[in-house]
Length: 113
Image (cartoon, rainbow, N blue to C red; front, side):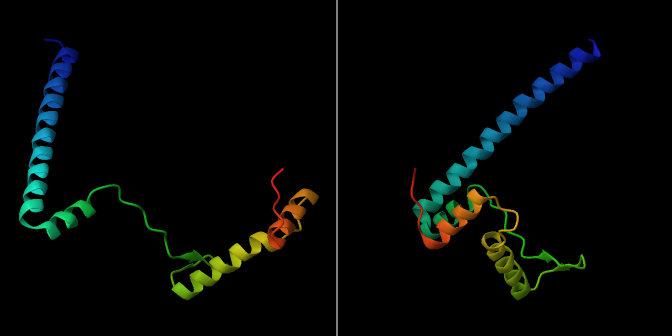
């Protein structure tokens, strides 16, 4: 048997076994959830809460002017406040249309055209 044929055969066997093990694992998980639902509803809902996509947390740190990293909550929040506030106050590089848009936002005059 050629090396390529041997590899293909082994890969197919591996894939079949992996699918079989995955199905077995999923069945056992479903069985555990069903049992928990019947015997201990609180544990059932805790298990359900653990399912699903995990979300990444926003890193609570900033880089200071000197290049150091700071994770002090008050300093991070103040930096964010300053940065977000500057989004609408720094109009040096705006063209006339952008300046007018910012003024409309500030005054609440947003008319759809």
